[in-house]
Image 1 (cartoon, helix red, strand yellow):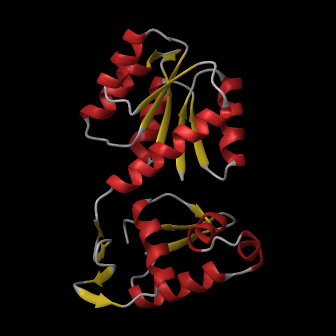
Image 2: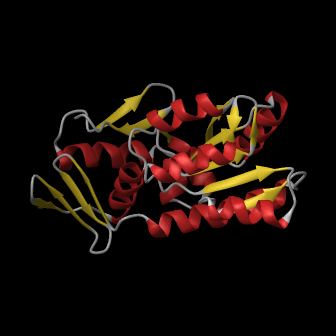
Length: 222
């Protein structure tokens, strides 16, 4: 899962990043309003952790801009403002949840998991990238309108890729998605085998590309 942290306090941002990495999330840090807009324009995220008070702008205004452009990524607003009116204002502006500082890491992670599950459920049941069409309801893959048979693991991997377009997914993340045995994950090259088979079946050059030293991603321009 790829998370964006929008926080102008460097120490707080690094602490959040360390916490999320320990939970196997990948994340970017935006140091303020303008920096956050640049990240959001260039990348897709599963969740945004947004501080209300930013040094170069207002997190609430950024939230309104995100929703005005029809970006439906879940947003968890973080703020020291604890008044009920403030919470209502944030939720009415399009936030999915609101957490008052100081907060416990346990509660933060729990609320993140809720929003990530909600976001996954609300994603479209059909995904198309170029000639590749995936139907999540019927578990069917079509390439250039021709049906392609996939194993369950191959389908699960392709679904994860297509729901995270242009985001680099590590081998650990991919393995975790198809295998709950963590020991087996670390000892096996099963992901590389499945990706080799997917590439062969899809037969589109550079559709799934290797990012050296990190993992794999879908190349939307292929």
